[in-house]
Amino acid sequence: MSYDQDLAFQYTNPTKIIFGENSVRETGLEVDALGGTRALVVTDEGIVKAGLAARVEEALGRRYAGTYDRCVQDSGFHLVDEAAAFAREKEADILVSVGGGSVIDTAKGMAILLKEGGKLADYKGMQVLSRPQTPHVVVPTTAGTGSEVTWAAVIKDWDLNIKELVASYYLIPDRAILDPVLTAGLPAPLTAATGMDAFTHAVEAIHSIERQPITDGMALQAIKMIARFLPVCVEEGDNLTARGQQQIAATMAGIAFGNAQVCLAHSIAHALGALFGVPHGLANSIILPHVMRFNLEECPDRYALVAEAMGIDTRGEDELSAGKAAIEAVTALTERIKLPQKLREVKVPEEELAKAAELALEDGDIIFNPRPVMDAEEVLNILKEAW
Ligand SMILES: [Fe+2]
Image 1 (cartoon, rainbow, N blue to C red):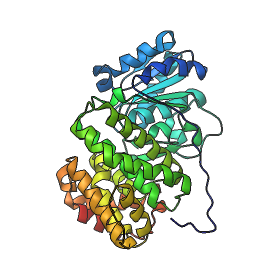
Image 2 (cartoon, helix red, strand yellow):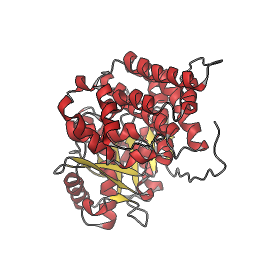
Image 3 (tube, protein in one colour):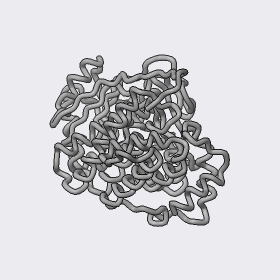
Image 4 (cartoon, rainbow, N blue to C red):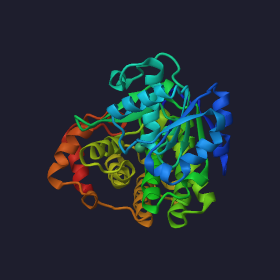
């Protein structure tokens, strides 16, 4: 695990993490600690129906100001504007997001608008903020996105059909309340797909050109925990020990990639999500082994670490064969948790692969890939392999 002498990095992790069965009960106290008096719950209808939003509302008690429950998959700019207007009506001074990545990212956008005013489209891009935003407590109901500890919100432009980044260190949530009870009801296919999003975050943090020793430690531990516990979560949904371990791993992977970034697999997943609505975790899961194969010659030492973390005995093997073993192990993991293996299974049209390749090439994460991507043809080849 060698580094060049010119290694230089920054590492930020300001989120207080609260873990434990029924830790959702701490939500009210954490709102107090952040100076909040009127908390708006941000969520979606499914979470409300599952009774999960009610648990948070109850924990908020006298601080509860209302619930915005119209978040959807791939949150859009217009939706965040609407949600912020609702929050203003309720005179909210703190946001409590309860849900998966889209819900959390919607609340990140709202946090800006409540503080700065205007429309979310005014804040596209990186580091556009210069002061702390509306306090934000996250209660994740999936274990994958890592958005509870990262600085970016991925928001879809529904008119142009592309996913845009709104990113700033001031968007990193103040609290992440990890309660495994809240993820116990997640159906197996969603558990598997969101779990592989977390796994992809960890692997991409490991092979990123922005990798660094602190995030390596987090990412490798996350890989170890996901390889062991994600299959248990999928096969025994109500196993709270496994659910908890997966949740912690997803958050660690989030901290890792929040600092070390993600790479080509995410660029392709963003394109597949924007063009064809392929759920993010599923797209990552299908693409990751192919991206690892594309990168292998560039960073076999990194994938040898992945193999070791996944519990593969690579003693006596050179880095290249250990790296290959890691790729095979990733495929075996996705097969065991019964995820689709090919893009054709998730209705990606073959004739539009070139369009996806072009879009992936424009994605900001691609610059962090260990093997530089020179043209769309290279991405297209990966897509064809995965189709
Ligand atoms: Fe992701």
